[in-house]
Image (cartoon, rainbow, N blue to C red; front, top):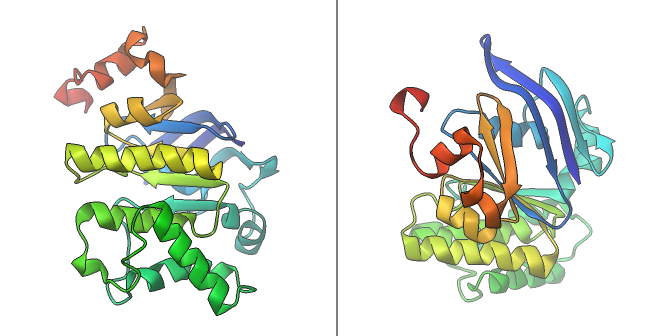
Length: 247
């Protein structure tokens, strides 16, 4: 479980996180929605130890990570968390297999045969076992997303974060990615946190949905009940009714 308590972060005297409280429960898919610039990416980076909050608490499996040194975080936390970046973040100079092997550098005890088995198995789990030697420039947008997911699951993390996983994809490919997220969550027992603007996808793949607004979580609900909520801010956002001055 990951617990975030009263988390604050400002940049140039502008408060981005303004007292965030959130829990990510073991085994669930939790999606965070909210307008652009409301602090979703800053929140994830704070949990990942990439940004130091100004104040507040982040506990990962009972360990307080705010204030941990880089070495402590790497040893105790980072190996258990992977992230799928919005644009995939694949290295063009490396083929697909080499990109996935990058994630395995933290597992230095593995011999080359074991590493290769993990690469192929990870590609198989996303339906791309035959493209191990293909380069990113030869891939479609949907394939690049799936390779990025294969790289993220190669280390068999407990927690997997997705930053806008369906951005730039058409509805068919978005469904493919959303179904894959749900499948991997169940198959690998991964606890999943998603940042998304894809409301249909959020409803399909999530167990719970939380809305971040003006630096705080203003509403959390069961995804199956998201269209029956009474919170006005939440309702206006998922129905596309926020005015331009609010966005």
